[in-house]
Image 1: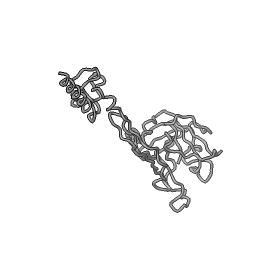
Image 2 (image 1 turned 135 degrees about the horizontal axis):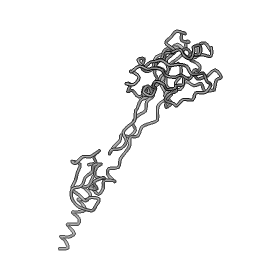
Image 3 (image 1 turned 90 degrees about the horizontal axis):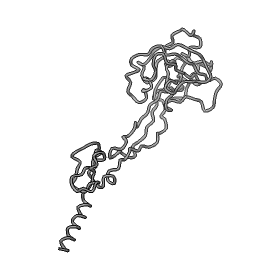
Image 4 (image 1 turned 180 degrees about the vertical axis):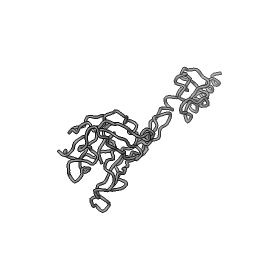
Length: 255
């Protein structure tokens, strides 16, 4: 009997090693993700290796060892590319790469590419663009560092214009690309801030085309967004200031 008992114990140990959740982890609730082994409540029988077993308390004994959630891991952002096209409103791109795929219901991977509005004021040969190249009343959102046209050093020429948004086209609300999500945030009646700074100023005149400084406060001025030329509308000038005072999603630059 002693030999028989010893054989039974060894057989049970071998079963524990080969059973459990090893290689059987499932994402979300999956009733087919099961095994026959010891459960965490020390009951031997059908046990599960899916996410739902934690709530129902019928996980296999090694669930938390074999099935830890692993979030997606990505690299840092690359440097921004140059503008896709010079001398006109365009876009630039930066990317990052997946370093570790998510597993066992870990956090999914975030966006791997960002685009931002931009404008190069020199062509591929290094020559200054013509004054009439492109439309300079376009705006590009300064949001989450997507677009940054600030000079390295402060300049006394830089100023901000506050506007009240009067209208926008329906195309602004249907955009779903990552770099155009900001278009959903601008709504009629909201105040927006637009920065005018070099090199968008006209011949160092201290003004940007479309800034409305020569217009009356009741004049309707037109704007159009970089990244979706069908997103456009009208606004009225409130005032010119040296410092913008708007939330990030309502802050723009003239380009």
